[in-house]
Length: 94
Image (cartoon, rainbow, N blue to C red; front, side, top):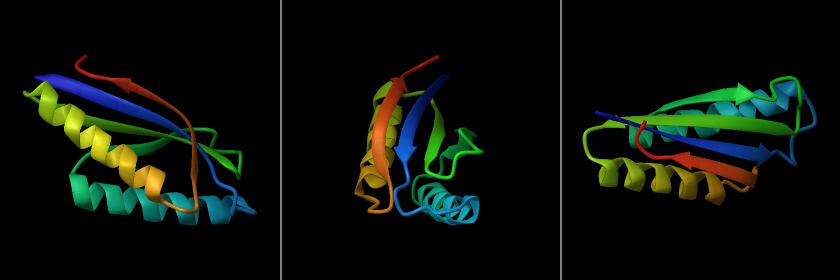
């Protein structure tokens, strides 16, 4: 069993309040959960209305599959016009 994780540092330029931040992130997290069946959470920067760090986890017995899923999740996040990716950390197979 492998636990693969992705941490994505985001800048939310459209956000003008914590309420805007929650709206943007909740929408993005719901789309990712429904499309990829992964665990995703806002793991840091909760008090900053223009910054967020999302953590994504996949449990699998195939490292290639987990890498593919996390790559697709990352591409979806990159394609979201309301956020800008500032950084990422990928950890395959803990």
